[in-house]
Structure formats: C-alpha cells, structure tokens
Length: 157
Image (cartoon, rainbow, N blue to C red; front, side, top):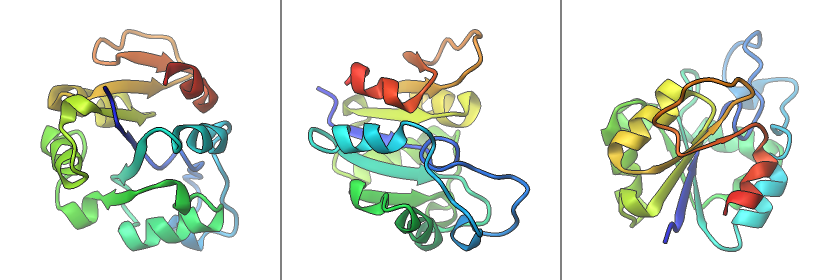
C-alpha cells in the first residue's frame, strides 16, 4: 500500500512565475496551483506528504517560507531541496534518498509532478508510482497516471 506521496513544488503545488526573479518567498504575489489545496487537504488525512524541489533560487528554508505564505506548509511532513541534498532530479538517487529519509521504501511511495523528465522518469527508475500533472497529451511511458488538474488526485487515492 502506498503511504508516502512526494510532490514537486513549482507548478505542482505553487504557481511558478518565471518572469519574477529570486526566491519565491520574496515574490510580491504567490498562489496555489488550482486544485492543489483541496487535494492536499484530502490526502493529508490518509498519507504522509512530502515536498521536494530542484528550484534553483530556493533551498529548503526559503521553500518553506513560500509555502507558509499560502498556508501550505502544515500539509507536509517533510521538505527537501536539491540544494540541500546535493542531488538533483531526475537522478533516481534523489528519490530513493527522500523515500528512505522519510522512512519508506520507493515501492511504497508516489511522486506527483509536472515535469516528465525531472519528476517522472527519475522517480519511476527509483521504483516510485508516478503521477504526471500535464495538460498536454503525449506519450509518457514512465507515468503510471496522467492528470490534468491537481483535484484529480482525490479520485486516484
């Protein structure tokens, strides 16, 4: 049974505005990805939730500050950034390190993200179940599930 759900941060939980410089916690405006708050509220009752990012301008502390601005921080049990881990997605070691740090095996873990290359391919190679958030139809052989909105996670789990 899957007990850990790992989420990408930018454009999976919080909207990424690429024209804004610096860490997201310093942006004048931050917001949820549509449906993400409802999905986290629902899933947090039955699963352990983790957030993991490759964000270039943010470490774990600044990611948490940004999450706090939309009251998202409390949904997550663990927080990881590639800056602090010194491992980047899509390296499968990024995902196995996180699963083990949270006390889970990759086979008991799910990765949800919007980047097929960074979030899905590496997680799949690490043994995670994968959920790709994408509005684009295509061939995604490593994605176990394809969703077009975060709200659809409620039906999956």
